Length: 167
Image (cartoon, rainbow, N blue to C red; front, side, top):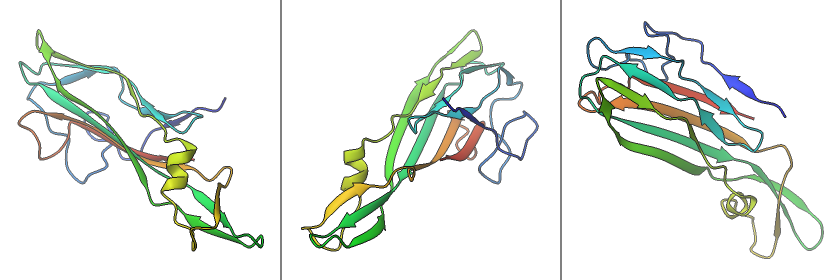
């Protein structure tokens, strides 16, 4: 099994990677235990590691993870002619709302997105004619994902913002 750890290249003061052009935003005195990061899984899903942020008082937070999956589908007519089409993105959201603090610390759980089924990817593709058959081309599924942890009242920029692509 091949696991790819996705770590972006631009680091900010807290050691996080930002997919946006803003500084991570959270309560003054917030400090992190553990390292936020996401891993591509062999089935196409992503898993984002859990961590803890202390020094946040009673400030709650939300997690928003999104994966947009695309794949190449081959459309074959009755005569055997093949046309490759790109699926429209299949978006798989994973949201954890209203994470509550305890004793000034916020525990951010590990989360995993669910990869779409082959049928969902095929349904997102359009062949030139409804009589053509659709076949998912092996090795063409990609996942462009984003992950953000945002504190309540600090919506201008997430405290943690990561993004990447999985083959």
